[in-house]
Structures are given as structure tokens and as C-alpha cells.
Image (tube, rainbow, N blue to C red; front, side, top):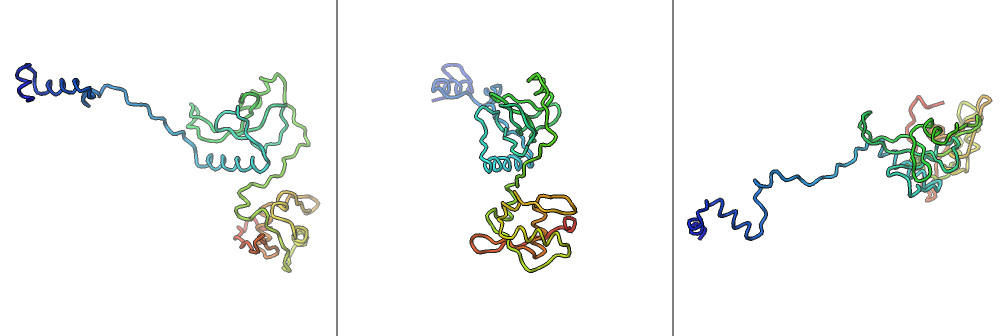
Length: 238
């Protein structure tokens, strides 16, 4: 039938097939569609592995201190709750994921300043220019102590430190172990301080690891278990 129609209309077989497709409303053959623009495919934003980790840590840290990201902030911007320098009312320390630019491929987290309606400045001098005055920082401002939430994957925050009978060769270590006895991991790392050679130091994760590894402290979980000590690098021992 196709041959008969072709003969009567004077079309070539290829023209006959094209005529039939057009009659049925079929799409044009692939050869005719070559010039058509392909549908746009959204490219996945480049993010470094470290930036992914930083974003997760910042989310958890904000939850710990009950700080919420304002709805009018730019995407991929997080409150930097560890930043401590005072800022004018309405302005906040933050970290934001960078875009690709002439300076690099982006995908990293950078400190910035975010204000009303999500207005963002990367540099303090640019924020000061916008405000019209210099931001003064008092000399006595100290960084607030805040244990990184990732620490508590190693030692549960509600686990209790228990002093053992084992003694250290240096007295200040024995004294600090005696003082943290009965404290939770969170309280010890967040609040406890000890004296050494006339100076006061915050009790940190390295101290805790060293004391647990040395057998002077045990970390007892609420369920009745004991966290096994991890090996401490020699460089961190005191």
C-alpha cells in the first residue's frame, strides 16, 4: 500500500514515511531534531568534603545553644555561634558556602556578617563602610567555651567521670582528676578549669583523653557501661 501511494503521489519512500508521520501527528525523526536545544539540566553545586562536615557541625552547634537561622538569610548560610566579637544590633556572625568565581571553584565555608533582610558582607571593613562607623571590640572579650558536639560521639555528654585510685607523677593532674570526679562529660568540658604553674586552663578533650587513658578516670554511661579509652598520641601527653 505504501508503494502504491508513493507511486501515485510521485514521492520517494522516505517522503511517504514523513507524510504518514505528519498525518498521525508523530514527532519528527531524530535526524530532524538534531538542531533542537537539549533541555537544561541543573548542575549540582560543588561542595568540598570539609565544607559538608562544617555545615553539619554548625547545624548541631546551633541546636545545642538553641539558635535558629532566620528565614530571610541567604541559602547555605549558618549562624557562627562560636564567634564572640560584639556586633551592632541586628548583625550576626555567620558562615556561608561560597560560589564559583574568578578566585576559585568555591564550595568552601567562609566567615561573613549577615544583617537585616539577609544582607551579607564578607569583610568587616565593608560592613563598617555600610554602617558608617567603626566597630570597636573591647580588649576583655573572651571566646565563650563551647564543646564541639562531635566530641560527644566519643564520650557521651551525660556520662559521669569517676576517679580511680591510680595516681599521676605530677600533683596538678591528680588534683584536677579529683575535682572532676562526679561531673558529667559535658559539665567538665564546658565549665571546669584547673590551675597549673600559676595559670588557669580550661579542661579540654585532650586532658580528658589523657586522664582516661592513664587510668585515673573512668567514663561511666547512665546505662551502667564504661567507655573504653582511646589511645592518646604521645605529643598530647603532659
